[in-house]
Length: 361
Image 1: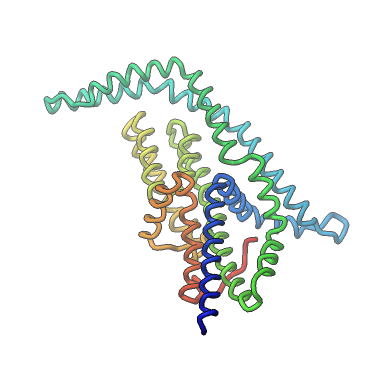
Image 2: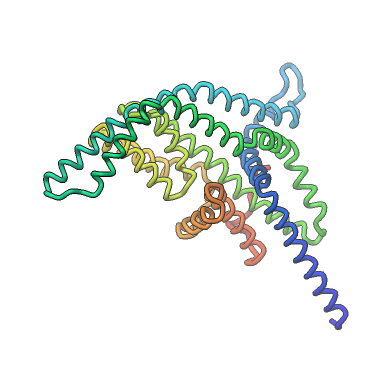
């Protein structure tokens, strides 16, 4: 290789690096939209099996099958309708339970004060928390009296947050196009690749596709299972606010390790406000469901390729939280799964976990 060829090679590498930096900078500037599009892709992965199943159905009395476009649109519209119907049915019950929490708050603080007083009498020392509990008792009474106003403000803030996060227009529309044209997008991407690199690129995309499919569909099933079974279990044992606690417990499954601690603390605290025995019963129900989930449900709905070392999971979650807060926590594991597929294919030179199983979009 002579000097002129080396200069051309370095020039191409420099231009390529600048192009990559420019793309990354553009993504950073449009990060809010990019995050919404990522959510849309995740939602498309979750809905893909439903669209495939409906698309195979034939129109009655004909041999004609329902088209991909119509099926994708119908599934997305159905999901939006189901979302608002769920809000219509669940919000009144949730508001009633939130109102009950606020009304019961002074009583819960009073019980905590009595417990602290008994501890002080037993050990003959004044605990620093006593003064804080007195001010908390007064504040709890004021909150209880103004609970209606707080609920209204809280629901308004929650509605704004939902609209911003979900991106009511962007996410459903993007989800529709990913469901409808996902395979064409992949073919288009293959078309711009050099012919010599297409086979390798298809292997990499296959591993990424399989990893994301495993994570998104498995996580959706796990969260739904935990939310429903927890709500039913807490209702059966008589735990206060079963709907709210059950939904939060289901959502906690999104966050590895820390989610279990948060959910257990919530269940124990809610039960303790009623009685120590109720706290024990609530924790027993939650731990039993969590163990059943870990050893029976999760291995069936999560593919083996999503198995990551616990240290990797912990570091990924902490880094994601530091970089992007809640969004970073949610995207940490799929990001690591995609990175693992790229690393094993492009650096090590072999698939991430055996032969690729083409799935997803």
